[in-house]
Image 1: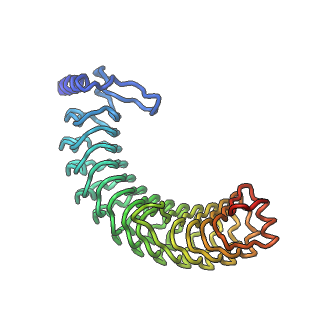
Image 2: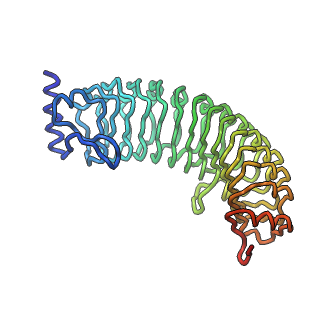
Image 3: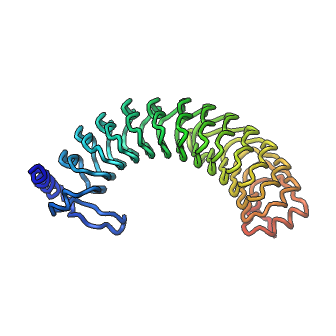
Length: 360
């Protein structure tokens, strides 16, 4: 009988809100809508109401035995307390709505593995966040968060944390507790300093700190043993920009680093240990203040893409001809003079950008 009541109420709501019958959406490769067939309705495990132009979610939806609920791209301002009934829910996508806060009952969903709250208007996260002990992905992009609560750092199974485009100015030492973390995105915030505890993230593979306010890196960055992609660059025209002048010698211990982006900083020199980045394939050092490169640069045997444009280079180390590059940018280094051997080496590179008037 309860199932009959739920079915009729939710069917009526779906009709009133122009929600389609359950159908496969080929564009997004998933089923969307609410079924008008009772048996299909009662057996639902996944509900996808993304892009349905709804402003509220009927409480009847939260009495189903769902494992996945997608409500992205709507106009929802508040979740009902009844969401706490979805004890088997593993994925909740509330991105691109108008949430100002979240009910504490949301954090009773201890089976959640993926929680997406990006593109809303959240200004804080409640202490109950720590209850989501099985959470593996937390997406908080494009909100108004000024900080991350200490309770977040108790989520020991978290593998991906994204807080892109918020108002975070300080990163707690608690970040070092997230030892299972594989991806950390803090792009477009106002962080001035990385705590040394970031070095405890020895499973981290991708780390994005683009467009923050860093002036230095801690020596403990050497602890990022698994890191493959590191972005410390800036987009021109941003108010909050990193202003790195030097790199610690410990950066050479990032043995698995594959991609490093340092463009639009103020880097004046590179440590000798930089040449120890044996697995580096892509390096962007454009728009810095480099006058020279260390001799060890020639040891970057895996490097394929190198951008040195817009610096103050006067010469290149003779060892650079050991590199088997596919792409090289040396443009806007007005005082740069290449040796004959280096000129011949440049001719072997598929894509070369040099100053105006340079031809090979």
